[in-house]
Image (cartoon, rainbow, N blue to C red; front, side, top):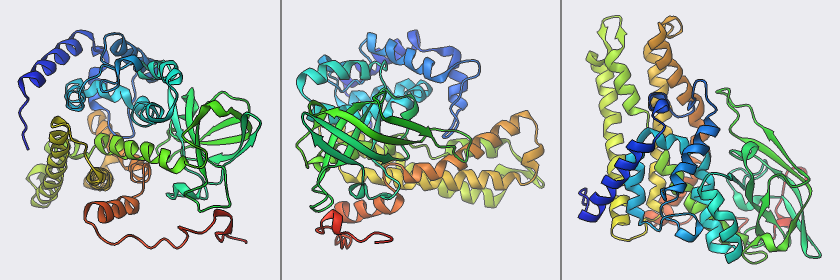
Length: 414
């Protein structure tokens, strides 16, 4: 691995740093820096409006979706330049949270399978943040088995009629468009009868119902489709080849989530430096120091695993399924870190002063959001299977329904 910038990369870094220093919304920097997983809020401002304004400013100056082609709203930059930008953007990068699905998953899928006119029409507003996209995959009966979906698409003339339900759809309540995976042939094996579309989320028959989460937020949604009409021109890929199309989305999804998951360790280390226990500062307690040392090692391992991927990008290589490691380790680590921080405070956490209360709230938000991180983009079990089969070369998991026609797979009550 090489951690040094090439002369070209150093020049790009300096240019990016100068532009961010001159244009970033610095009035929100402190709040963004203090925000954590599950709690990114701005006092006295609508974070969606602030995020859209920042994204539009970046797009107008050529700093949005750097790796996308210029004709689609990007910069045509190299993958390593994208990484450098993310490093320099720092806390302002948290304003990109509501765009991650559109930029990291929907956009690449559209680029791979949409027509040229559609790409030029839909991608620039997506890159600039003027239009937000969501991903309509998960269903109540399917769990992590994407191919187990039941939402139906039936051909009627030049249109498709959609009926069904999706769940856990992040950002559906403020999205303008979405990519939608449906079942078009129930008489073949479950992976073979799927078809992908994109649609306007304001289409007649689309109903979005936010889900109240344990942390009080409503980032996820249920989405219902009742006789929703989608023209065949909005089909992505061939009929019944939606599984292959979805692999493009899923690969980008896991890479995006894995790269963006916090570990919570820097926040915990800072907290332990200021927390007083009954017998003295927390940082001087041998048990606390042992815990911190273990998490420091994990955080370091994640950092250098990420560096390995960055080095691959710098050489023009494409990182493989090993990127699932980041999501698997970081997702469980932040849950453990947050739980430990709250344990350290005990009952005193309820009665502490403003500064301690702020820290407590941060770790509460982390703890309540962490299970969602471990589920979205594939559960821990799915990640372990990917690592076992595609990284370590172990035998594949037994899948008894792999070649069974979907409508012949036994279900409850049948």
